[in-house]
Length: 175
Image (cartoon, rainbow, N blue to C red; front, side, top):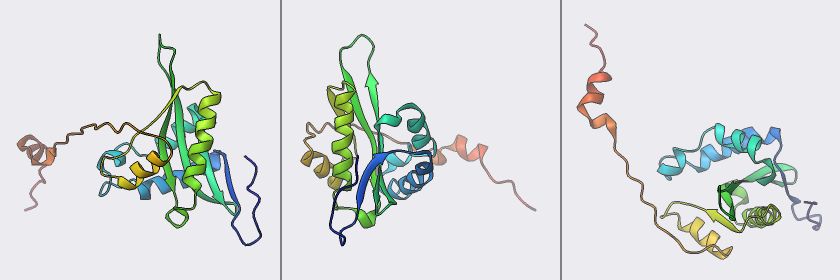
């Protein structure tokens, strides 16, 4: 997408295709945004393989936002084609914006461009998920036409409290 024409005092915002040089900044921003203390289920799935895998498999649905040429955010998506189904889905897997650029329209621009790419690829629906208590993200997606919030329950069990875990991982005594 061409650079947004703006006055000389306004930042130059660009939404562009992902490039290999973007993988490290994407990973590190994701590490800061998707932390276990805030989003337990998101953090468990965020690792260095997420941006690398999507870069290799779905590059056409992975975008980067820059402000004045500097990395400012990302949208990582993929297409889901179900066998024996006429439906193709677009899935916005990850969306992240540097905190200093939040609420400046970068996320909106990336979502809009990604939706156009999904349409061009034949997707009939776009899916996105977020934590149920992430009201900021839920409001953001509602403003972009997403609806039908559906609850999904995640259950967890801390194995460190189990006797078998304690036996296996007990520290040897140092006498």
